Image (cartoon, rainbow, N blue to C red):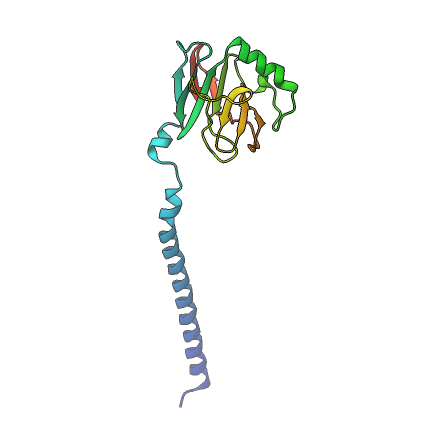
Length: 183
């Protein structure tokens, strides 16, 4: 016959063993889930080629007034417009016009003759037309997104269409008179 004390001791050992197995199994499940999910989470990080272009230097020397160029930064097109006096005057004249996302031209440029914007429509991420010589530039001589009809002006501000915001401006600075660092 077993004594009451030894039965209690066996019950306590059984409960301790059961608790240990419960926590060990739970810990193993958490580690296994983390190991299974990590590749998915890691795949959302930018690829090496995109990270390598996190900072882009561009020399603007030789780009004539009235010309527009496109370069790639972080996998996105960046539009650089060497604006003519006419485009600058048009952008400034429209500062007080009714707009979807009001913003004065002076707040969108570091130098009036150079406009630097991310060339991605803020509606659904399309690439607006306007960089090529024969492209439609919309009703305000800026950019036009034919997918849903968004019109941007010469300052990259949304003027008509479903886009909710102006074309974004990447972080940039003029390192010298003609060298621009984006990113």
